[in-house]
Length: 139
Image (cartoon, rainbow, N blue to C red; front, top):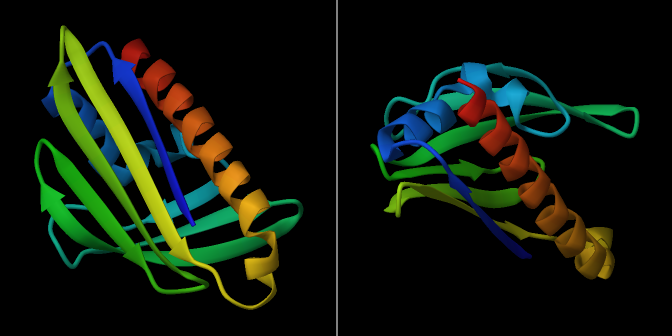
């Protein structure tokens, strides 16, 4: 499963990247996020996030796999599913194009619902980037 989305934000590249990399900002724009512990400052850093969805809470651990300020930030997730998420910030006209890509290896019964999971992931990434844009342009 692979999902992608992007948004144009009216701010410099450095500002967009700094906002994404600061996990203290995550609750302002990440869907279903209850808490986030840890910092993304270098490859190998670990962040633990807890999400709630449909009455269920789950914690995941993200490992920073790519850290190239002010352009790239990537995470790998090993549980509950193997996944990767990456953010890319690049100058675009008078603002910054922020793109996010997520890929996950589905297994077991989830494979039967891959189409639905894909559609939900696309929708979620787009909604999260819309919230990101609103939150960043307010600052």
